[in-house]
Image (cartoon, rainbow, N blue to C red; front, side, top):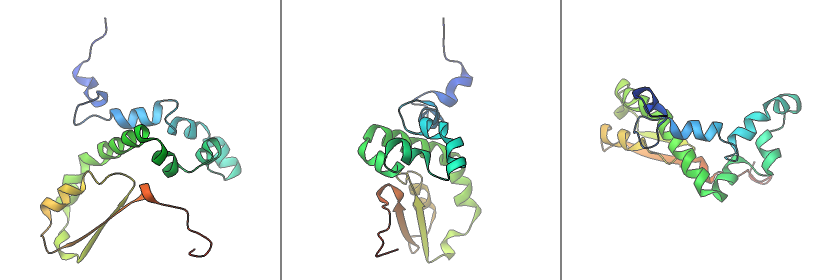
Length: 140
């Protein structure tokens, strides 16, 4: 018989401190990341991005077309940064900056912690790479 132990909480779905999503994202076949990591040797040899070669599109396009994988990606990014967000927000006097930018690929799940701790006068700007597109030849 198999059962969860306290040590398995770190990969148990639904636990707020779990790394379940990032483990699934990287270790599950058919989610995109596993296949891309399997192509790392070719990446190094050819200089080309394995994911783009395997799926004929970049990762952000893949996530836009696959909402289930996008949700796992976003949860994985949240789970990776959540343990350090409180320490990062407490470590600096963020209020001294006129503008703070959140630039990343997730959904800004940890941004709310910044918003609670930074004076309302500070400006905020969030850019999600989920909507990133290749620059056109005209715009660079």
